[in-house]
Length: 64
Image 1 (cartoon, one colour):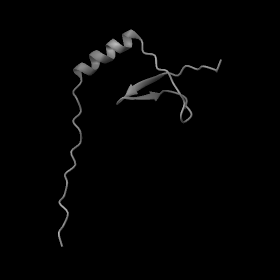
Image 2 (cartoon, helix red, strand yellow; image 1 turned 30 degrees about the vertical axis):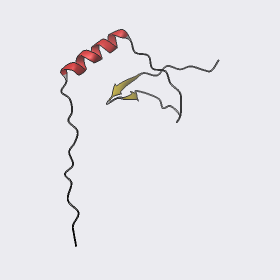
Image 3 (cartoon, helix red, strand yellow; image 1 turned 180 degrees about the vertical axis):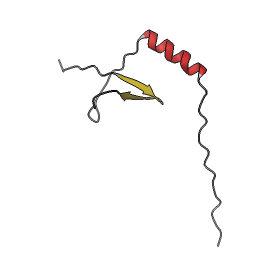
Image 4 (spheres, helix red, strand yellow; image 1 turned 90 degrees about the vertical axis):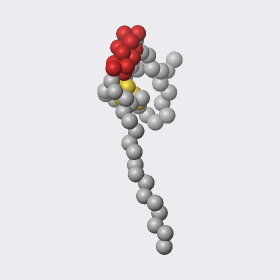
């Protein structure tokens, strides 16, 4: 059986950020979320304003 370690982290912008430690590239992970954390995160996200995507003005290409 392979060695198993637990890492604590938080989800920010849909990405899991580890508090300590670094995983090797290509590591296979399993994420466990407790019911309390899931309900709290769902309620919090319902009340936080949604971020609008940044709009980048496009300049027309100069014609020469």
